[in-house]
Image (cartoon, rainbow, N blue to C red; front, side, top):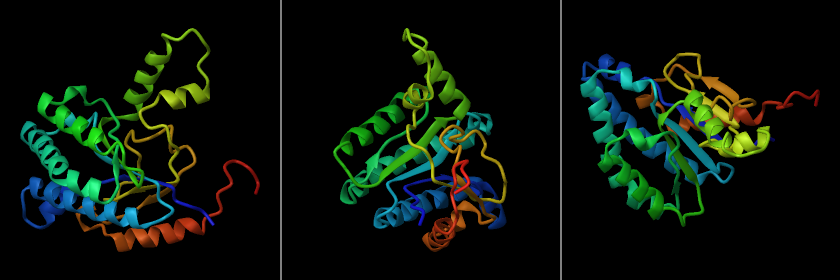
Amino acid sequence: MNRAKHIAIIMDGNGRWAELHNQKRVKGHERGAKIVKEITKFCVECVDIQRLTLYAFSTENWKRPTLEVEFLMKLLEKYLKKELSTYIQFNIKFEPIGDISAFSSSLVKTIKNVQEKTAHCDGLVQSLALNYGSHDEMLRAINKLNSIDEDITEATLSDALDCKHNVDLLIRTGGDHRLSNFLLWQSAYAELFFIDTLWPDFSSDELKKIIKKFKKIERRFGALK
């Protein structure tokens, strides 16, 4: 039976959820942050799940309206400060991926503080993809390896990436059927689930059903058996 050791989620649909409820888009993001906490706590309780990687802010999200981007930055900082005690309480290690150097000094400081304060935790690893894009991740990894006088191999490239762990199960909420530049290298053999549920309506019960379906899939990784 398959084990979903690394689950990655593209959390899509916050804005549409808000519009459907006649609310401002920011309300969808606020609701989405609460779902992040619910799903993370559920994963803590699942023995099989070792890593949870969530697509929080992409390299392309800078193209959104300035006010929305500014709100997302404030929401992220508020979330991390508020949830630090939760991370520690539930033995969750926080590992951001992406190029956080583009953020404000205050937000960078908060991100690094939560990472340092949870470094000792040895339970679930929660990664937030922040200013993350697979193309950017690969380019940064290649540029890093170019300074080393040896051939670049699959192993060395993988180790130079922000996320060094292959994805078992990748879920995208919101109805779209694309990966949107998310963990392309790591998801080479991931099982993909595209669901219509908007992220603010996603629940641990639905995740449980997806994991149940995942466990029944025959994963051959290119082989016949």
